[in-house]
Amino acid sequence: LQHRPAVARKWITENYKLGSAYRLVIDVPPNFEMNIDGYPHRGHYEGWYFSDMPVEIYPSDSDKQKIAGWKYSGKEILDKNLLLSSLSTDVDVQPILIH
Image (cartoon, rainbow, N blue to C red; front, side, top):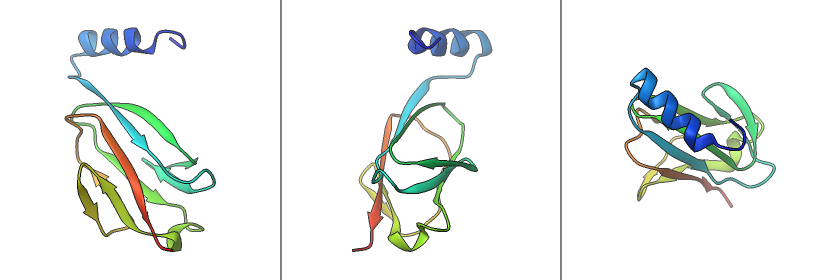
């Protein structure tokens, strides 16, 4: 699995009829702390999600004051909590930083 993740995703998709898989990239500063689906994460993130799987992204309490919201797919969401109800394409997300 570690050396051939695309093959594993394809096998899971076909055998469990989960639909297509899409890449989510969250491009934040290296020390930025956030939660992705309730799990803490620090810095850049890349993950794969099957269609119709919601993704929730929000800053940790310590970094909440550093952002005004999020940008993705040409949209700006001025809310610190971002809920992507489902992915139908690869998505790149960036925080809107407060300077």
